[in-house]
Image 1: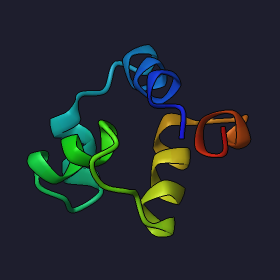
Image 2: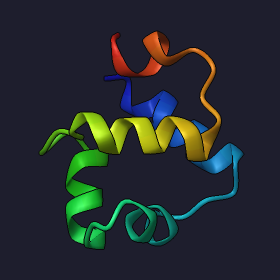
Image 3: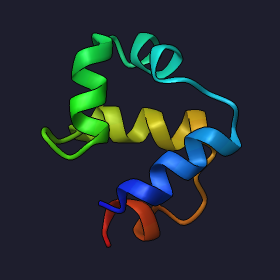
Image 4: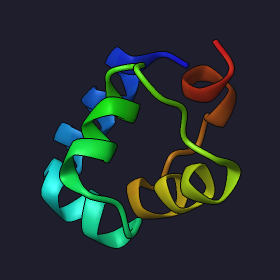
Length: 64
């Protein structure tokens, strides 16, 4: 996963970790751990992020 590209997409869309954690039903701490590579997003969480952030090139972020 390309963490920097994901963080860039979050910033581009004007979202916060708090916003996204709520939408993914995660604690802010859990979301932060996943965002910083200490844990992994499961497939359902990744799908929701793709939808929320309108990510077009999924491979570039999630399969780098």
